[in-house]
Image 1 (cartoon, chains in turn brown, blue):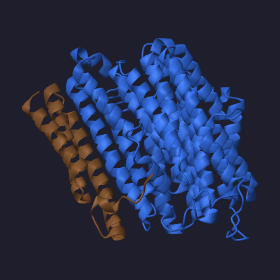
Image 2 (cartoon, chains in turn orange, green; image 1 turned 90 degrees about the vertical axis):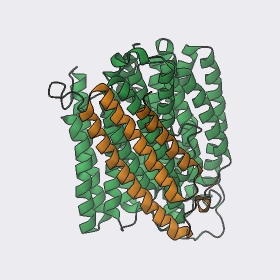
Image 3 (cartoon, chains in turn yellow, orange; image 1 turned 45 degrees about the vertical axis):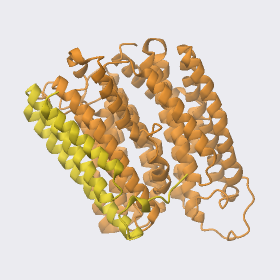
Image 4 (cartoon, chains in turn brown, orange; image 1 turned 120 degrees about the vertical axis):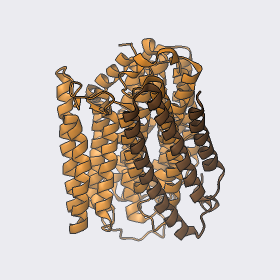
Length: 98
Length: 495
């Protein structure tokens, strides 16, 4: 594994760690974004290794677009959640059970 | 061309529907335009089926016009099957929502419903891994917004946040797996990847990639232990959307996973999937037993039903030469039947919610007698979900049982577990029918209830009749299921 691939996987792991351990909704969303950047890096590396950089670039641009839409929706849900609970902590999101 | 058309009609129509909803503020008109667009898309899908029946190839762009590594769509029987199921359910949901939803934001609602359907249709027709991922995300993003559509209430928002975070983490894991496959092969083409795998095929790294695909797409398919978002999201969403989510979106997640796994051309993970399916059906059924919320009970029952479907897929992948076709056929037929019966069950729950404003089964007691037509349909869906003849759920379960017997050994064990689970599920389905249809009417219920609009009754009755029709004449469903199953088994090298 090249150092670049290692960096990509490390970013994914850091993002996943943040998503799992953080209790603040905004930090969880930042964790998702870090994961997405790690995956993009692995894609760029794949394009570099196999000599198909053009395809890898278009893929990464599309991934960025999809992530932007997801984050926009995530943030709007966070705002709605804040209006209901007056808190950004996921501890306030434990009413649905069973 | 027809393949592209089936998606463009829906996604382009979504823009028009949004404008119509915004300008006219009429629920009937907006819903009707959405319904017509879905029929148009269904016609395009039918054309694809006709072309395939003639033994010709269809896709966009065509193989001749395509640049290397360009993303593309391709007509396939599996895609036709998924699109037909999705369009059947979503067109009925479009009719149902004409009176069920509030007038405010109606354009947004129908536009999102159409975009979600476009995503499902596209996932089936996608020809390469990345197109499949993009359309999968289109479907997911639309479903996040639809779950949290009523954002003035806390419950949909909480469910939506959970759904979004869990689902996005899953899709990013799957995307990482796709990125790794791409860095090995330099290709994203589903058909070309198996030949390019080379030394990577069957290695330890390959198992890691398979695990990431199963976990990543398994989140959407609600395979236990990745199912935790489902009961919240499916019970908090508007009822029409609950029907779509349970009836087709989680199944689309499974088909995405299946398509990605088939591209790897490896079959050593069948047993793992069979074991996951065993856990899935037990967890779903046992938790459903103790639910008092009607929609939440159906949500857990969806987890259990996914267990049955995943079992068939596991047989097909693990034992392709012994029971492959039978297992795949049972799984796909159960997807079609589940869309009809669970879609109908959620629409019934929505009708009761519309009348009484509650999902608590004790407070719904006896409502089915007050509206006999809905009560009878509710009975049909519950019996069909439990797998009683002569309704449609029975036949696909028989197909699954038969494939298990063909496998032998672990297959026989799984068949016994499937029958045990069907018995467990009878307890809560019949319990629900007993309360909601035959239970005593609570004293505090108002004497006069608002009448149930025709647009809410009609889709439920259509689904009830379909449930009966496919139970009595199952070969109608096999017309569309069999070619899709044969196509998948041909990819696995076992016809």
